[in-house]
Length: 212
Figure 1 (cartoon, rainbow, N blue to C red):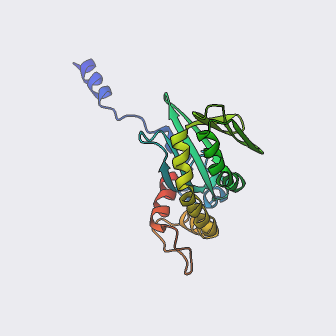
Figure 2 (cartoon, helix red, strand yellow):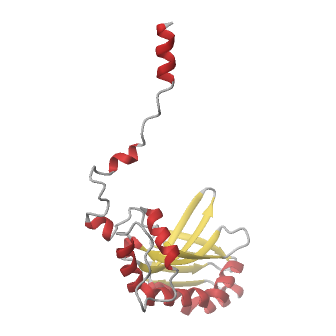
């Protein structure tokens, strides 16, 4: 009987605590270090206030705009594609966004005419083979393949992406200032007077807390 009672007691023991809790020190002062004030989040693809625009009906390809904490909160344009459980992501800086906007109409015309096309700007490259059925967008060695219909849709709506990028670029300093203050607060704080009206600060506050 004693052995049986010991067996029951062992089965009723609570599960071990999550190992993640051990990452915090015993002071409970989570914002004492500079790491938390200006966080260098480990995932370079972590994005704040992301706006997503899908490029096809099955939503396997998209373009988005958001703030990247690991890049000093700079807004960036991101292209993504999912195929066979693999996700490919290309992040474009302002220079390449401007390049893409300038060549998209001509590029689509070349594809419609079935003509080959190659444009290279630094690490960014856009190519179309003869026949015009599909194209590849490269950043370094990574690439995403687009169909003509997807690229034409991108061309028609890319001014919306650019407008969002411009709004976020103008708000970058306000976002950085707000993030620094919000990460030190346990309750929601209002943005400073005169802060950009293009930023959803309640959403930004929640996303910052979720990332931590």
